[in-house]
Image (cartoon, rainbow, N blue to C red; front, top):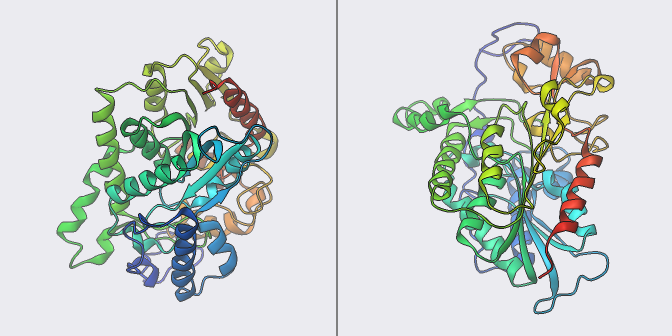
Length: 404
């Protein structure tokens, strides 16, 4: 049944070419490449798949979905034993792309870090490439990036958003070269329903639609809107492995983390517990919240800072998982950005979906919670109104890092 504008429960969208594997992006195949060669290989892959899908704004799509590297800026950047003194590997989140790491990468670059950012297998091309990918391929990618960074810098740091945060923790547990972590809404615990997401394999060989949790329009240039069951299953398996390792290992490296209590993708309480259990006294976590009691208590714990996530003048009801790493002036996701995240209304509430996408400034913003949906037409918040303050906190943490 085709969906009709203005009709509720308009039917299940049909699978399209993008919902099947391209055959080019389910495994990591760059182990023998330099990072520059890996970037070129990835760009060629993204361009090929996106061209086959007739992607609008192809050059933007290739640029935003590809891995990248930045040379450090400023003084005191030359290493004692390597080319550069310090560097950070950045890893994006689930269904996302390196685009989400661009703004934070610029901050690290300005503070003298060599920056490398990877593209996780399955990402950046078309949603169907998530059908067969495994978390082990993501682990291989982060290990590769860490190794290439270690060839260039004296001090290796890892930074990750969402799934990238979990992968950064995983790598740090295996790799003593890692000197510190920067975690942005890290995926340490996700909805336990994801544990059953692999059950679709029993029937999906006959009914391919069962491979998908959500079929969406996929209008965003830098993030998949459709969501495969395998995506959730792989992430759940990874988190279980991480928790098993954390039961016997404590990280004594400095860790900076930021997350939102409003987050409906990952469990921020688990991240907070993780931070407080690690041994380095320099550890710092910023938590966005709407809880007035926590805001009133201030920084009772020196390791935790509570920040008000309500911004009434911008119709922001609270933060969201998607709103951590993007500043308000981002041309794509920002306050006046070209994209509005309204896919929670598709396809069952097409009147609201169209109103949200066509008139985003009339909408409330925040996480997709029932309370926020009850406030009126809602678009999921995609930028951080506190990004300037986050930058200050990140700079202060970087200043506190020990010299090696």
